[in-house]
Amino acid sequence: MSTTGVPAFAPQWLALREGADARARATAPPALLRDHGRVVADLGCGTGAMGRWLGPRLPGPQRWILFDRDPTLLEVARKRVPAASVRTRRLDLAALRAPDLAGVTLVVASALLDLLTGAEAGVLAETVAAAGCPALFSLSVVGRVELSPGDPSDAAFAQAFDDHQRREGRLGPEAAAFTADAFEGLGRQVRSFPSPWRLGPGDAALTRAWLRGWVGAAVDQDPSLPHGAYLERRLAQCARGELEVTVHHTDLLVLPRSPEPV
Ligand SMILES: C[S@@+](CC[C@H](N)C(=O)[O-])C[C@H]1O[C@@H](n2cnc3c(N)ncnc32)[C@H](O)[C@@H]1O
Picture 1 (spheres, rainbow, N blue to C red):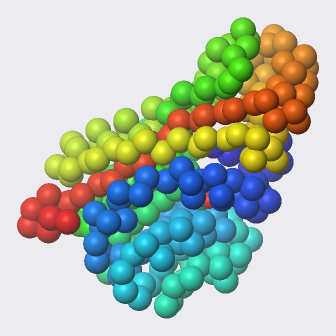
Picture 2 (spheres, rainbow, N blue to C red):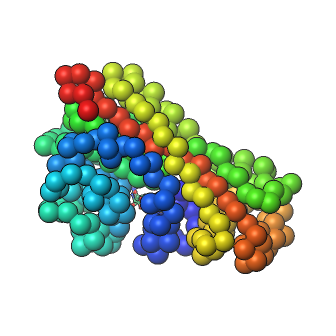
């Protein structure tokens, strides 16, 4: 979920969403990963939110290798991931191959899969499976958004937003299911956990930014939508503390089968 009205993946947007992301992330995977987090590769690390959330939940000292194609985000992440050792790799993940993950004991990614095409996700699954370690793919949108109170236009905006996410072959709301199938086809065990954002009156700044982005993307996709009045109505409800939004996501835990069960 990257579309916010500010440039995609601006550090300000990533900071705004970090608290809601942290509340949303499924808590079972860190316990299931046990001591597999000695050398962690974070793919599409942004400013390092996954390291800040997951690092303290894994036992023992860790080395994190942060991958992103954005050098500005990588520089922020390098300073802000609390690990014994942090290294950054500027790389387009389309070019990620098994040697890039040599020595890695856990692969993680957060809010990434829905940005990938099916071909990219397929190659990523093969590369991660070849590394032979567990993987945790957090916070993939699944195309379900609930706004309360409801509005007759909600469904049309939601449909247009999902179609916008699928532009140029991206997986969008199908990302988690597609990637789970890809890993299962490679003989890996996959477990899914719900990880919804639940935004209420205490999240007004994030809700406003999310609303602007959600409506903006929907209107890019379908300019016939009655966006001005709808956005005004929703922002006014948000300002009065009357709006609640649930954005559903899935976290995927990928486990190698024997001989290395976790
Ligand atoms: C929505 S942000 C999530 C950032 C971070 N994982 C988090 O949870 O806050 C997606 C991140 O993936 C990176 N990204 C997206 N596609 C990429 C690609 N093909 N190669 C490398 N990085 C990519 C972006 O630069 C951005 O930092």
